[in-house]
Amino acid sequence: MRVDLILLCFAYVLSQFYRAFLAVLTEVLERDVGATPEDLAMASGLWFLAFAAMQIPVGAALDRVGPRRTASVLLLVGGGGGAVVFAMATVPAHISIAMLLIGVGCSPVLMASYYIFARTYSAAVFATLAAVILGVGSVGNLASALPTTLAVEAFGWRSVVWFTAGVSVITALGLFFIVRDPERVVSDVKGSVLDLLRMPALWLIFPLMAFQYAPAAGARGLWIGPYLRDIFGADNALVGQITLLMGAAMIAGTFAYGPLDRLLGTRKWVIFGGNILSMAACFWLGLTSVESLWLAVALFGAIGFFGASFPMMMAHGRAFYPPHLVGRGVTLMNLFAIGGVGIMQMLAGGLYGRVAAHAVSPAEPYQALFVFYGALVALGLVIYLFARERTD
Image 1 (tube, rainbow, N blue to C red):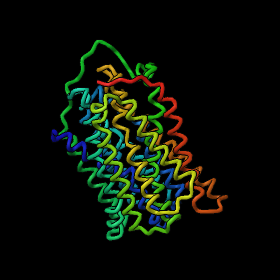
Image 2: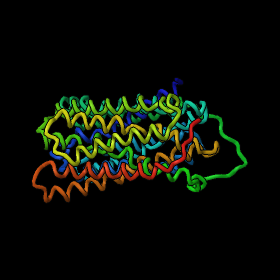
Image 3: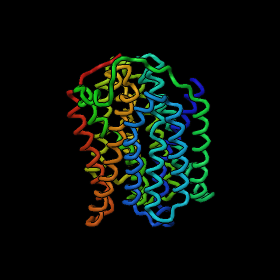
């Protein structure tokens, strides 16, 4: 793989780290800045919403100025600057502001890679390449689990976040000097994201795109830590180990989905089958009383593994884009994916608070959350049944 793509992959490691590290910081942030689970759900939701809101301008920037400047400038200002705000936080509002800025900073890095793939490589291998960079970049998901827990215990959470701020700045500078923009498409055809929104085929894909990642991102990014502490009395070390396992399951799922469209000759039914199993795991956690820690771990792992259909769904949407709208196309799909997570995370925080206020057992708020997530995936699947199959 080209050096610039390796660097973009590392930038995506940072993005995965930032979206998931709150799960292991819930206890120290509550102690030091007074942030409740609802506050952190809001902050996490703001990360995803900022990330999603940036996809339309990022898509236009990729098509007009290229991935080099788009990714480097936003990561420098948003990623580095947001991490500095986080490291200096003294009240929950500072955490929310920081996560919003970091979401802006992380918004272009994966799409910059996908843009280069779509413009440089064969369409037939797009899903595999998308899965590879997503899977390798998801090392950040692992780093935000047990390694972060150990680093926070050794050096304190502020020192850890200051370190990530420095890494973000250095990475952004590297992107500016190393990334190579593809040759620009010269086309007499004018177009915008509105042209994509007029395509009926995409509207049958968008709902599942918005819902399929929400259970895995919500559980791994925030809820798994409080769940394990409240239901099973897990300490920080055990939470770190189990979040590491769920992160590994998400990476394994990403790689497993990657080549299946070429092996099985279908994208639609690979996506549909995987998300049926993710939905089933959500309902199992939500509708039954899970008394075994390791059964709970297995169900979280299933949500992570089978909910990793993002690159395959990106490839399904990619098959409908005209060449001059590739940048806007991949970012539009990402808007639905990440925006869905952001909205659902904020709704989940409110749902948790309302149920917890009247709950008679610690499990009830979490059961409500997973029924909510399962119902969302079910709704997306019903609509996706009518989507048109397309492979390259």
